Length: 417
Length: 114
Image 1: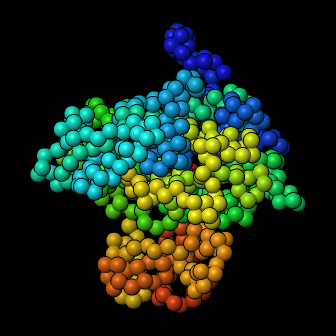
Image 2: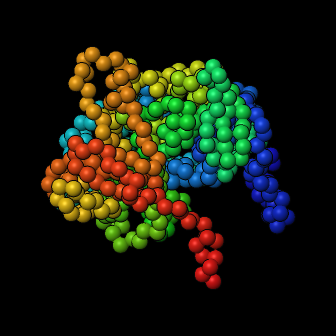
Image 3: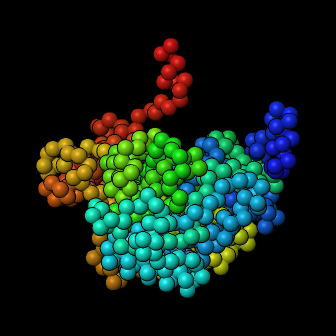
């Protein structure tokens, strides 16, 4: 792989940009791999990358039924933060946040991580109490999170309306300065390029149709629309389709898949310096480097695999945005889309071994998986390589729904999931 | 937005009036204190999360307020039928499939239009 650098840009500029090579190859699948990862999104590609980089396993195939990064990796609102309440969540999300810082250098690929700050608006006394509880809990875990007065919030985000006559008055905000955004596609592409450079096979348009088992019950490989591929270890990293894949191995999951929609406005000049979320009014907004306002909110109410959702959900989201930021009232929305998110009963992910020997699952990220991409991939690679979880993901088992040892971010969330 | 036929009101109304209420035909155990952890997990937490035909409960919250059941396809989001709570799963063989052959490629939809 030829490294990207300012010198490479200058060299190619002199040569009419004819020397750039493909970022990853598309090889024919081998008959057998050491590890198969199902799903070429950020989490799956990252898992392959860390398996190769940190655990010396390079004979890996990442199978993708569609195109690389075409699922939730390419459909989210790119928000990164780690200010979760519980110790377990703080551990895994902050592990990710530390990896975000330096990921571009690690991958030699600009993922455009921008620690521009994530600010959560407090509209009433209950918000204030919940946020302050989060702030104290976060500080005990060494995670930055601070309380702002309305004036300080306005200073940090000038478009904010803090007047008492606003439709949804603001009595303060919680700010995580290390939070921010990254370029979602670049995360998938960067991991893909760096993994392919270490010998990982990325195979697109390859749909898994069955999970093969040995007579002793352990994993033997997968059936795909491009034939049978053998492997002793298979990692399922398939977001909304996890239940479908795990059913092939006879494992019933504590997951329900919902559509989650997002939308972007027409591009405008830089106006919005940070990420703002409002739990009570329920919307979140940031501005991409292209200038589009990136807007999202909650899921639709019914389970679905349709990658679309109801119009009333996004109009409700825009109602909230227009009330919070009246200056955006006359903006045109350019595109909207949906992804399918897999939601667990406690709104915390599952990164774990399964009852099937050799089968591992990384799922249940619900509406907030993008922020965790590097951390999730890193500890999931550890889990697959050692057939045992890393201490960071050890609490995120499948068995917690049997033992009752839940990580109940659903009840504690700083935002609705 | 979905249009949903309430079997009690006998009328098709907007999704705004309804709340989805999870899977249908899950019998609440009467011996909860005697159940094993595995049985409770299967009842309370594990879901089929079907891609395709699913049976689910809806409530006509801003209408008659009653719960009823529906057969819906989770790929097309189309309702095959709705029926009153307490009735067994209906025979769907006489109904038209909700998932039709999907034509998605540009060539397939546009090539004859030249």
